[in-house]
Every structure is written in structure tokens, then in C-alpha cells.
Image (tube, rainbow, N blue to C red; front, side, top):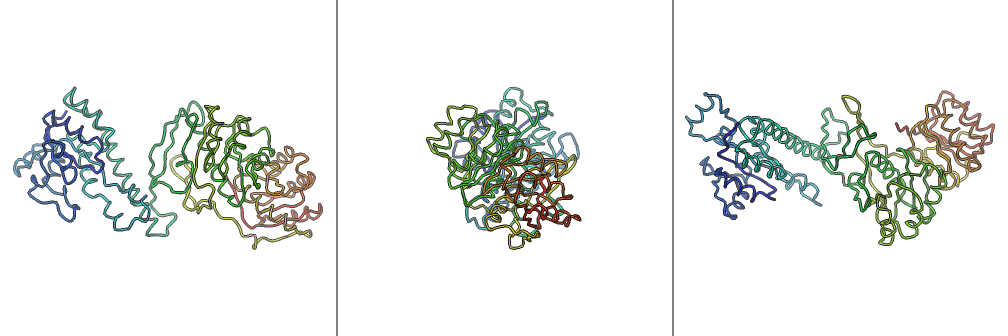
Length: 518
């Protein structure tokens, strides 16, 4: 156990620090401080001594050098139970420092400032702070280290009631300290890598996250779960920065489904569009001249699956759409904005989650990488944002697609890339009429879609996320009445597949691009 006599306080975020420092003073703990923190404490009537008075060395280089001094770090790092360490302190007239309170320059906040200069970014990289924190955490048996204002109250209460901090509590504070500096360095590294390099998959890749919320459970009630936001924070509209306007807390599965709904709706900017997601895959997608019709067309794709589903829109949801949606049981509704009348209608369904995701009504520049965890590691890849240019498409059958069919193919390709593989879907104009996905064989996906679509398949366009390994799925689609197909091509049996299309009077186009979604 330690006897806390001296504290060093140097914080960028000064919220709550005055009350905490007053509490320490009442416990007769002497306080050292620096720069703006020293001024704030002194102005509050708290007796402090500046670090420069102890080191007999002024702050210099515009504050870059404050605490980087042997007198300070020896006072932190000395092992109290080692005679050699304590003898060295005595020889050099150095006093121990028993408590470090430090949080770091606001680098994360700085890089979110519009048009921030690189000079300002660099000046907000803290050097002395992380060194103080790491030194204190290393010597946790003898030094208390505090890196968050959330820790002030508990530490102060413990010192007031017990006069000391237990080993277990100090271990926890040390773990938090190292996490604090690790996250800080990771944000700096990632930001500078994005600014200074073109590397997408570097040799060393650090992932840092901050918890947004604990979940009641994960995918299933027996699994614990939480939702974290990646850092630096993504500016692009996404599930991690969506704002919940009403409803219950989002569940683990709600967040997965909402992410799918948001990422799919980003494919469509020109027309009013609706995407319905169920179990991380679309069950209806439609674009129209108005949002209400887009919802009706998307819902008509599969009137059973949307029960308990997630719905996203790329335009403001108004009264008419809200009134229609209120007739169904939905888990989450997502849009760039909602009218007051719409929110009033939705408010009658207290458990319905309403998410505002600003920017979904604009063209969005998408980039970056995605992460998938496996036991003991991560898979990292570029985001799948590329769409093949229709100028590179090849018509491979005797019958050629009409201009209108090509337009439907463009819509279909944007849709099928978001359906779990193996997947096929069928569209008319700019709305889906049947979707088959998540199957172990492509013919099964085709059979499921045609079985569910029934008469709606006649005269539709079929899209496949990958090539047809056999002609069987084409035969299934032809029997159901499909009139045109778009697929990547590239199978060793392409000729056989083309022959099947020719036999059935179907036009077929090779896009040259696969869209597996595992």
C-alpha cells in the first residue's frame, strides 16, 4: 500500500479537475502542476507548486518541454522498497511523486476541425503526457495514475475513506492508462498514415475503438456483446455515427442489420430508394420517383420477410411514408432526416428505433478498409465500392438486351452485391421482385427466388453475384420466365451457360465483376 503525499496534475481536459484537486488538498496532498493547469488551479485558490520550481528549469519550446526532466521521472519511477532507488533520490534531493493525473492534448478533436492545418495537428501530438502516464503505470505498485475524469470521484472517495488505493485498484488504473496512451498513439498513426502514405494494407495495422454502448447480449442471449466506434471517427454517414431519435436501445443484431441497410442505400443517389433488410441481407430494394412508392415496391418483393425488419431510405421520411410504415412491425427505420409529422406518428410506437443518418441523401465518397474477425486474427480488405463500367460489359448471346433492360441490369447489379452469397435476384424496372441468397449452390438460390417470386418473375431481369458453374440455374430462371440475365462470366462452362440462354431466347450480359458477400 502507498502513502500518497505528492501529486502531479497536468491535464488538457480540465473539466472536474478543480473539485478533484480541492479534495486532494484537503487530504494534505501537495500538488505539482504545469502551464494552463497550474493557472486554473491557482485561480481556484488551490495551493500548488509549478514543476519548473522543482526542476529549476523553465518550460520551453512553446510548452513542448515541461515535465521531461530527471527530477520528475525519477520521483515517479523510483521503487519505494528498493534501497538503491531511494538512496539515489536522497543523494540527488528528489522527492517521490505518488499520484499522476494526466490526460492528453486533444489530437482526436483537432483532426475533426474543418480545414485544420498540419502544423496545428502536429502541435497537438502530446509528448510529455504519455511519458508521465507510462512511467506512472510502470510503477503502479507505488504510484496512482489517473487518465480520465471519470476516475476522479472513485479515487478520491477511496483515499478519503481508506487513505490508500489497493493493489487491485491500481492495477486497473494502470491498465486504463496503457489503453489510453495506446489508443492515442494509434489515432495519430492512422491519421498520419492516411495523410502521408497510400498504403492500404501496411505491415503493421493497429485497430483502436471506443465503446459506444453495452448490449443486453450479443447475437444470442448467452453471449455478451458491446458496440464500439472505430477511431479516428469516420466522417462518412454510417451506423456508428447515426443518431437514435427514439426507441429502445439497439441490439447487437439491429446494428448488424442497420449497417447492411445503410451501406446498401448508399448505392442509390439519383432516385428515391428504399432498402429492407432481414438477417443481414436485403429482402426488398426499390427506387422510384417518390419514397412511398419505393417502399411499396420494396415491400412487394417479399411480404413475409420484412416482419421485424430494418428499413432504410435515402430521402427525408414524411407523413405519408410514416403513416404507411406504422401499419407494420419493424425494428428500425433509418433516413437522412424525418419530418415533425413523421416523428409524431412514430412516437406512438415507443419501441420502434428511429435512426437519423445525415448525408444519405447525397452522393457519398466511399473508401477505406473493412475488418472481419476470425479466432486469433483479422481479415482486412478494401471496401467493395467498385461497380463495373457498363461500357466494359459484353453481350454474349444471340439476343441483345434493350436499352431499358440494360438500365434494369445496372440497378440489379447494385442490389445483388449486397445479398449474401450465393445469390441471385430478379428485378423489373428499378425494383426487386424476388431475391435468393445465402445458399450453398447457385441453383438453390435461383429456385428459392423463383419459387417466392412466382408470376412476378415473368419478364424480369436476373442478376447473379458470381458466374454460373452450370447451366441449371439459367434453366430454372428460364422456366420461370426471365427475359435477360447479367452475371460476371468467367466459368469454364460459360459456353454451356450461354447456350442455355440462347435456347430459351434470353439475352445475357457478362459484367466481368464478381460480388461475393460472405
